[in-house]
Every structure is written in structure tokens, then in C-alpha cells.
Amino acid sequence: MRRAFSRPLSAMAVTCSFALMAVLFAGCGGGGGGGGTGGSVSSSSSSSSGPDLGTVSAVDGTYQLKVKNASNGQYLTISGQSQVAGAAIVTGSDTSNTDTLWHVMDMGSSQYNFENLLTHQVAGISSASKTDGTAAVQWADNGTNDHLWSFYKLTDGNYLIRNYNSGLYLQVDGSGNVTQGARATSGTAQEWTITPTNVDAYPMPLTVSGGGTAVHDPNLIQDPSGKFWLYGTHNTLASSTDLTTWTSVSSGIFSSDFSWWAALNTTGTGGRTDLWAPSVMYANGTYYQYYSIPIYDTPSVAGTNNGAEAAIALATSSSPNGPWVDKGKIIESCGKKTGCTTTFNAIDPAPFIDASGKWWMVFGSWEDGTHVIQLDPATGLRLSSNTTISNVAARSAGEEGAFIFPRVVGGTQYYYYFASINVCCAGTSSRYRVITGRSTSPTGPFLDRGGLDLSSGGGTILISNHSYVYGPGGESVIDVGGQAYLVYHYYDGNNNGAPKLGLNKLYFDAAGWPYVQ
Image (cartoon, rainbow, N blue to C red):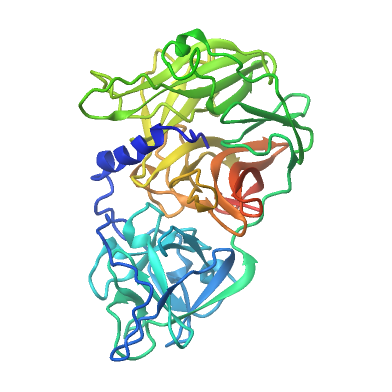
């Protein structure tokens, strides 16, 4: 949820994350191995002297899809409808369940992630193998090249589905298994029909209107009177009485720098007032606003980049729209400063209170993942008696904006983790999406539905691009009278990619896993 937009930091974050975490995800099992350069994507590679190689084609990510093998007439699905990461992708009879439904997510350059809508994991190749005959499996969307696929339309109207990492094609082999292989010289075992169902891949966001809905990183709270307050990056604030019609609030946001961080940040006159990703918590009759700020006074020094340079701070008020009283810094990352030892990025704070009344804050992003620290309920600042920084999630291809939502589901106290993955903030080219995991402890470990640890690239997809909704992310969660809502921004394809507030009701299935409605 907590994303810094249009900042010089982002380029640094992308560069650093791959350098710092290249080892973390190497060889992590079915579909989880590292990249490789993969096969190139050509616009057309048909030859009259060989098999039809088709023409690379776009596939619409708006709708749920059914994918049927032209040879055996069966549908692409998950073995045994298993939720376990690494379960085999197979073919079987069409069912009324969502295991035979798929969703493609455009990743640019005619490459797609291929998501199963029962498990919300993506298709990959076991151990990211480039070997002919290796099985296709499902895995968390950890951003590796074996999760990228291209679609080639043949002259008979069917498709080839080619893995970017291996350059091989999805096929049904002689034993009926779904594997990858070199382009066959005969037969239709590598040919697939792709049929849209005309059902949206994900439910549409609720209708909202009015001022303040062109928001990034929305954080939503409800005050004791029942009024809603919507905070966002770049000092935006709006209010509503019904979650539908919103009014911009011009007062109540920070109008000047606090002196201690104005001195650190020399960008602009008297410092910088463009706050990132505020997160507000109401407790003890007080509004606690946690926010992050960039620091651009980094000296030009040689050496290792130990994360980005930023700070998270706190301000409090007796009113949701201020005035705000400076309470100081929570945690800081030092970037390239001489002697710097931090490896994290001090942005995207999100506080929460656990079932025993202890206060915590999740924060962080690309550099070395996201983390949880304990706060002091007496001050809202970091608890001096517990300086532990718990590492809870990391993903080499980008993860940020974590939010933790405590909830009892099925009699079990869970801490549901939500975060945004991939690169944000590119309008209708944004690849942002929201993933989730859970733990029975506020400090983890957090596992996804497939059983993968989020600290090793796990995360079950909760919502991604569909229809006119591009780049859903920057999420938070609010409980309104027992009904949870996922709160996020997206880029509106019906409005030239303008940012907009997204709201969907959030439910929990029989196994206690969240889904949007």
C-alpha cells in the first residue's frame, strides 16, 4: 500500500534489489528458480518447410479464459485442484469449479503471466528448467522468467504457448502429462484453443465519485462518528459519509515541514512537504499518522548502496484532519552515506495492534523486503526495549506497501499480510498487483496459500489487472461494522489511465483465505 511515487529513489530500488537478492531466490523449487535470458519473441516465424510457428499475438486479460488442448480435447487445470505450490498443471474435463479458468496478465514485450483462478498461482516450469520434457507446475508469482509466456497464433486458429525462460512450448506428452518441449514437426499436442468466458477475471471496484478519489496509496479510516477519511501520497485528504461520494479536504494535511526533517531534506524551499504513503491509526482518542519522507542530501560517495535513503516519522492529532503535532522519527535508512549499515528502505509504514494489545509497524520495500518492528503504545514511537527488526517478506522482482490486518477467521487469530508487487505508477502500463499471505504471529512467518514463505518470494495473488483496472495496488484494509474492504488505487483505462480509488468488499473462504467481491 505504501508506495512513493515519481521519486528518484525508485530507479535506485530496482537496481539494488536484484543485486542484493540474486542469491535469495536461486533454485527455490518448482517454478521458482532464477531467470536466464530465455528465448526471444519474434513477430512471425512460420516456414513453408517446417511446422507452423505462428505469429506472436496479444491475449486479452479482461476475462476468465478456458484453455483446451487441441489433441486430447481436455482443459488446462491443476492436478487434484491442489492449492499446494509445485502442484502439476494437467489437462482434464471441464468443471464448474474455477480450476479450469485462467487469467493472463500482460507483462510487456508480448509476455504474460498465466494465473489459475482457483489457486491464484501462476504457470511455470519445475525448477525453472530449460530441459525438454520438464513438467509444468504452479507457483507463487515471484517474478522469475519461467513465469513468462508468449502466445503464437497458428493458421488453423489455435495457439502455441511458449515459455520465455526455456524457449520451449507447452504440450501434452505421450503419457498425458503437461510438459514443455521443442516445436513438434507434426500433431496438435502443442496446440491450444483459448476461449474467453465473458466473465471478468476479477470483480469490478465499487463506484466512487467526487473530490479526492484521484489518490495514490489510499489509507482509509472511520472516525467514532462514522465519517470516513481517506489519506494518500502527495498530501491528499478526502472525506465521505457513505464510501461512495467523496469530498476533498484542503485543511488538515501537513502544510509545512517539521524542522528536524526539513533540515535533512534540502530539496525545495525550506525542505519538502510531499509526504509518502501516510497510514493513520486511531487509538486512545488520538490519531497517529505514520508517514515516510525522502531524503535527497545523499553525498556522492563510492561504495555499496545499503538501501535507499528515507525516514519514517509520526505526527499525532485529536482530529482526523489535524492540526498535527510532530512526534519525531521512527526509523531511518541511510542509503549511500559514509558508514551506512542499513539495508532496508524506510518507507511505506503501516501500524497495527495485535490481539494482546501490542503495537507494531510493518514497513519497507524493494531493497531487502518488508519488516516489522514493535512500537510503544505510550508514545507511538519505536519500543526501546525491543529493537528487533523482523524480516517478513522479500521478492527480487519488487514488493512494497505492506499492510497487516488482524482478523479472527474460523476461530483462529490470523495476521493477514497484503502487499503490492512489480513496478507501479505507469498508468495503463502498470504491472502492479496485490498479493497476500498470513501468519498466526504479528511477526511471522507469513505463508501464502500454496505453503510458500513470503520471505522467499511467496504470495498468493489477490487482485491484478482486469478490464479497465490497471495496476491495482498501494493497498490497505478497513473493517466497517464487520465487513472488510480492500482499499487500493488503480489506473482507469476508461479515463486515460488516471489514478483512482478502488474499493472491493473482502471476504474469507472456508479455509480462511481472503478474496475480493
